[in-house]
Length: 366
Image 1 (tube, rainbow, N blue to C red):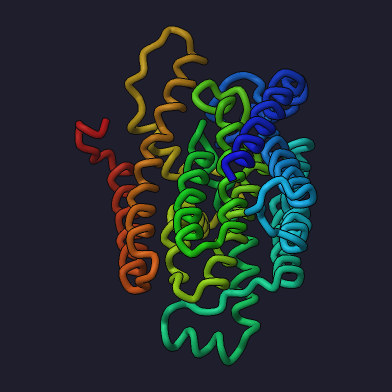
Image 2 (cartoon, one colour; image 1 turned 45 degrees about the vertical axis):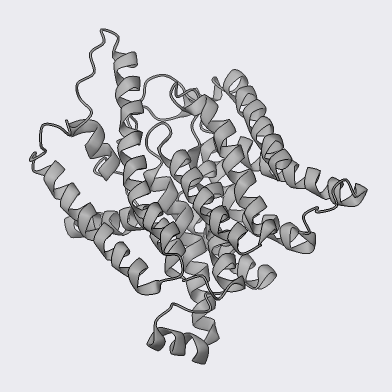
C-alpha cells in the first residue's frame, strides 16, 4: 500500500507539473471578475485531471502486481474497482469539461453527478442501509429504495460541497486528505485493506497536487478536483458503512459536516435573499475569514500580498475540520455522541459566522 501511495504521489506531482508548465496560456480564458476569484494572474484549474489520471494509473499498477503475483498480500479489487471508476466518469468528466471550457452550467454538472450516483447504485450496489436511529432504520428496512435514494443524494451532493469550500490555496485539498486519513484509520481497524488503499492513493495524489497548489498557488484543483474528492469520499463512506455494521453512519457524516453544512447554509442564505442557490457569491465562511480576519499582511506588491493572505486563510478551516475529525475517529461506533457533535458543529458554525459578519471578533483571532 505504501508503494502504491508513492506511485500515486509521483504521478500526480509530475502530471500537475506538466499542466503548470504547459497550460498557462489556456488559463487566460478564465473570467477575471468572478466574485470567488481571490488571486492574480492566469492559473490553470486542471489539478483534478492530474489527480484522476494518477488514481487510474496507480490502480493499473496494482492490477499488474496482482497479475504478476508480485506481493503475497496483493489487493483483491477485482471487478469492484473497475465499476468504481466507471461510475466516477460522468461527474469527473463534467467537472474537467467545465475547467476546460467554462461552459458547463451548474444544472448540467448536477445531472452528471446524479448519473454517477445512479451508476454507483446500479454497478456497485450502493445504498445507505441504516441511520442508527430505530424509526429511520425501520423505514429503510421497509422501503429499501429510500436507502438507494439517500446514496444517490449523498454522491450527487458531496462533489458540489467540496467545490464550494475549494476557494483558497490548500483548503479543500487538505480537508480531503484529513478526511481520507480518518476513513483509512477505521477501514484498517476493520481489516478492509481494499477500501483503505483507495483512500490512501487518493490522499497521496492530492498531496502531489498540493505541491503545486500550496503555498505558491501555481495550480488549482478546479471543479474536476472537487468532484474527484467528493465522489471518492462519498463512495468510500457509503461502502464502509455498508460493509461493516459496527460503523455508525454518523461517523462519515461528522467527518464531512464542514463541507455539507457550508453547502446547506449557503443555500439557505441565498434563498433568504431571493437569489438562486446556484449563483456564486463571496459570502462563504472561508471568504469572510479572508476579508475580515486575515488582513495584516504587508507587502508593496499587490499580487504577493493577495497570495500571502490567500495562504493564511486555509489553516483556520483546517483547524475547524480537525474539531470534527478528532471526535469522529474517537467515537466512530457511537451514533448518539456523533449526532451530538454534528449538532454542536452546526451551532458553532452559525455562531462563528455571525460573529465575523458583525465585526465582533476578539483581537487575538485577528
